[in-house]
Image (tube, rainbow, N blue to C red; front, side, top):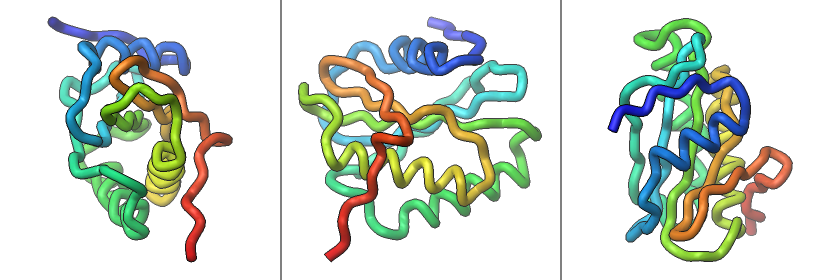
Amino acid sequence: MTFAPVIETQTDVERAWRALMRPLGWTRASTWLMFVGPDGRPFAHLTEIDDCEGPPPADVAAQLGRLLGHLRDGPLPAGVRVAFLRSRPGVHGIEDDDRAWAATLYAAARTAGMPAEVVHLATDEDVVAVPMEEATLPATT
């Protein structure tokens, strides 16, 4: 199936993730990246980062931010933005680890100076937005 939407609104982002992540049902937690061109068209390939169980490691925002910055300054055209989705098994809504991953992903985009769409979560039952105001980093001890 070819999926070629134009992404202009948060509703468009959610619609794209819903189409791309079907059928729902996950065996492990991953983070997905979708780059959206300045014309609003997503790039043809998604990037999956696996091994995203539990809370994010402390250095992930900086590492991912450096990678995104390198891509922004190199092969990606000016005006590209990134959309993130966290997928994980389970039927519960947004949990603390999901909020922590969302905060980390927003921080990575901010570090890179790359505009980011609203982060989304895909569980075994649904795809939902995790807006920035719901994203929280885990408490440090």
